[in-house]
Amino acid sequence: MTQGENLSSKVFGKVSQLVKQYHALTLEVEEQKTEISERNQQIETLNGQVLELKEEVKALQLGDAIKVSTGSPEAAQKINALVREIDKCIALLNQ
Image (cartoon, rainbow, N blue to C red):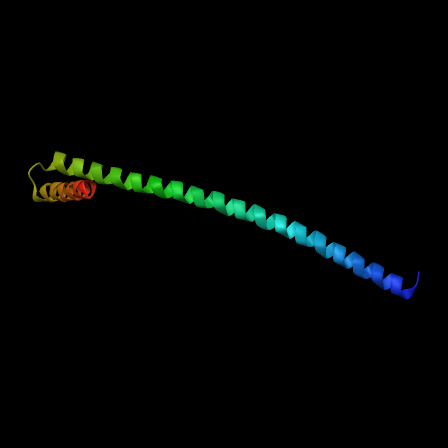
């Protein structure tokens, strides 16, 4: 084997190795993109659950306030706040 053939063989081998590494890294990137997408979907689901739970907490707190102190200013304020929120929702639906 001549020196030129030897050098050519080494270059070809290194290029081949780089191509293999490129394909492996491309696969890894795609897997990570898929994982990120799945995690983002999980985050959205969990954020939805958090919002639902916050609304449930509000409702339970209002119920407790009404049970404990019927006619108290705190209960009246909470009821008024809910009525305003309902009125806003109705106004948005009517648009």
